[in-house]
Image (cartoon, rainbow, N blue to C red; front, top):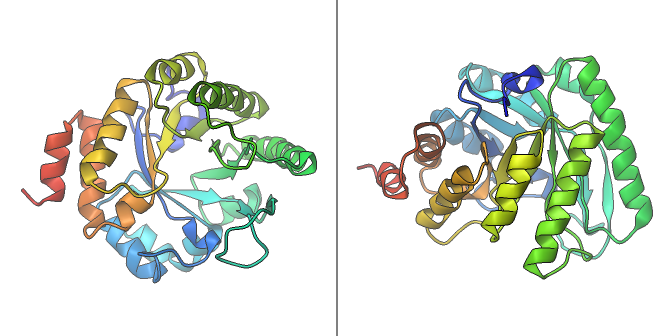
Length: 275
């Protein structure tokens, strides 16, 4: 499929792929390695990723720093979620709501807006509100010619443990996200490679895989990315595996080598090692 038609060319590179560094984790509190937003941002920007995912206020506050790398696109996170009423603490609550909109994304010069579609929630009112604001946001972003990225992660107590059931859930959720108006999907990679290939080959939108928890070794992260690309992914939205590393700029460069140049895991590892 031609992912470069329509709005996607505003975020994806000429080859239809992208390395986007997720930097919206401050919505959860203060994650390790991201205590100083400007300092972490500068380290990431040094590697010149295709884009960064951040809150509108991070983009607004550090507009000059981001502008120093004009080829780096900005994806603005427009919704909030939490599992506890106490910041930084995990709990059993289901809190999710919009914190921004397409108008603010345009005001800060964002190249795309990002939102969640969460299946795994048990409260039907939360799910209904999620669908309502996602569909409304889609109408707003398309009126403004702004790509909409929807993240479809495995979050919530209702997410099945069985791998085949999780694969089916992801397939349905990705399809619904597209039908509601999403241009690009951010989704987890599946252990079931055949199931992931089926999703990427059938879905009329590019899928960029999310990084999730930090891996123990960079080779593990690179292997996941290489497999995902072989199975039809068009890039990544990686956070902790990049900015929690000692050299975030090298991690970005290595990811770009895999995603844009077809580098091997060993070649990417050598980049991070400075060889």
